[in-house]
Length: 258
Image 1 (cartoon, rainbow, N blue to C red):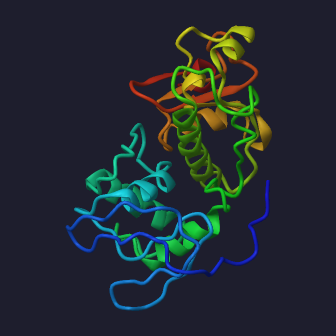
Image 2 (tube, rainbow, N blue to C red; image 1 turned 90 degrees about the vertical axis):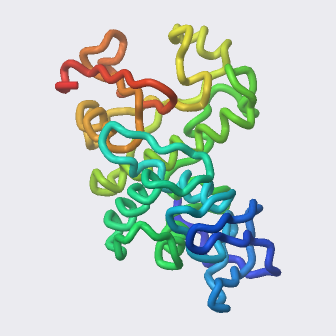
């Protein structure tokens, strides 16, 4: 577990122009500057990414996509939200659940209170404060050699981390042990992984029991955007719980009632 970097960085404006109402939000780069809102107020700046206005159903663009990554762990039981930059009903529902989880006004509209909470939850490299890229890649240093490009594998791992952050919070903010994540084809072969393993796409993480237990983790994962859950009772998974995103759904942890 890491501690949050102290303070937010202030610099010149480099953030995104965001959507208000049903209009589109322009693509944006991470910003370390104060973001000007539509009312002219200056919002908090963040070293990873700074939103500059209110996002709601009908908004679109990079600012929405960045928001979707952070609320990917709040899709509702058995669901997964698309990381597509389109703020539709599923994104609104995920934002509402995120807000409710942190005691914010749960209206499904992402404004300063929602963004400030996200800023508190992320480190300067955009990972959530309780997880790292290193935990999600014990195979190599550059994310290469999988079934997708290195950039895509790393991006998928980031979404996985935000799902785990949501799951961790829902389980009382107790640490979750990540034993591994991304694998190149050769790393996957070396450990006897399945030929179509989602580890090779950066979507997957293998979890240690920790204080929650394997079954507790498997059961909670159903609520946080994981479409693949394998745990005790499934062949080869009595010593860990496997969670992953991606298309389709396959849940099997018979010893846990799944």
